[in-house]
Length: 161
Image (cartoon, rainbow, N blue to C red; front, side, top):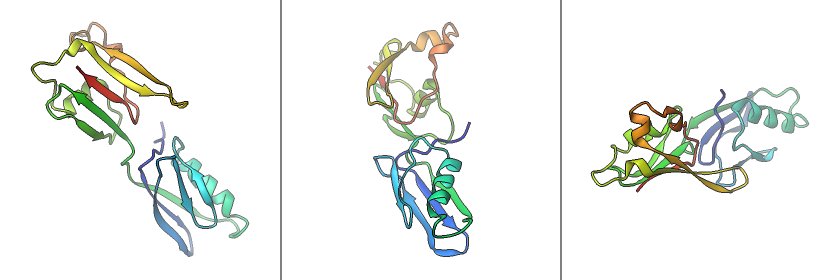
C-alpha cells in the first residue's frame, strides 16, 4: 500500500535540469501545496506517484518530457492523538501503521484511574463527519475480540476516559 500524503507533510520536489524548479514544500492544512509553473496541487490522500504525475502533466507545456522527482522528507502530517487518562497524552507521528494498542503503548499506557473498557476512537471521514468507535481494552488484551484493535488513520483521536 502506497503512503498517502497528509497535510503537514514536507515534500522535496525537483525537475531534472531545472534549477529553479527544486524546492521543499509543506502540504497546507487544506491538503494542497503550491509549485512554480504548476500552481496548487491537491496532495492530501494522494500517493507520491500520483503527485509526481500531476506535476509532470501540468509543466509539459513549458518543459517537454519533464523528469519530476517527489520525495516525502517528513511525515509530520501522519499523526494520531491519544488523550485522557494515559501517562503521556499527546500527538504521535506514525512512521508506520499503528493500531490502537500500539498507540496506547506510545502514550505510556493507561493511568491508574482510566476506564480502559470504555476507550473510544474518534475518526473524521472525508466529508468531515466524525464518528466514535468503541474499543474495549480488556477484550483485546485477552484475545477475545482483537478485531477491535483497528489500524489508526492520520488524524484519529484515541480517548481514554
